[in-house]
Length: 372
Image (tube, rainbow, N blue to C red; front, side, top):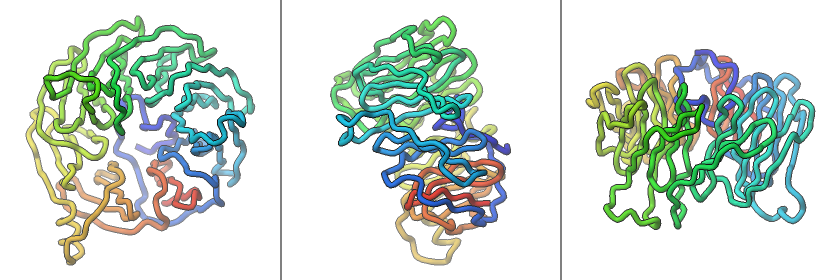
């Protein structure tokens, strides 16, 4: 698909990537001036005209790709919060950015009119991505309470408390939407299906492996992904596939993915801790192939094995694109053979997004890069 927008931090409601259209020429089309002097959050957005980024000072920066300039910069925070690092979660819809943070604030900003529409202080840090369902904003705090709010004024419609964890891991609460279902995976290891219209719980399951369901036990997972009527939950140490209608487990296998899984057609793709690229048939749970990425790269380049660090996994032009932290791009074809390895024209500072057959990202110097 040729994408025009990237309005959700995980691309779309289901958190799954499409098979993106990409010219794959690795030509540098554009490099901007520095957009921010502070650390930029890894996930960037694009509304069709503007790249939207946030930094750890709490700045929301809107950069026009056509005008090649910052058209709006906004900071919600007063001087008393100046020294606190801010972690903003964001989503954009119709010129409005909805942002939540680690201070407990949730607010709506119309960046076209340069006007703050509303702001609420819930006094508990937010710890999840944000989803929009019709007139509702959905997010979760660090105590694993689900918030459903009116997106026009921020008024509370419903709170759904779930199991708390005392110790916070790197995993944050994960939300995904599919048709009439809101899927919520919390840091305790419980997965909830909620009817997005009447806001009632359909079913729930727990993935904690210990019989001791102690709040101090750490749970880790990648963001939950939905593909048609299936939910993919990639925990440590198991990969689960569930039926979205009733929560029944279709299959469970002892594999841990270090990246958010990608699903296309009948194929589920993950990368393990040992840097194995694994393709699984989503209907049967059968492993189609499992490849050692490090060895495949060494064989392709005719060199010795070298350690690699993987940043992200995407699908474009029917190829699996593996982005490495050293800014190399490794393209595997659908049969698991390397098509090409190339170094990007600039070092990845954020996760790349696919827009109009190009790749957009911020480099290590916080400059916007557009590659054809």
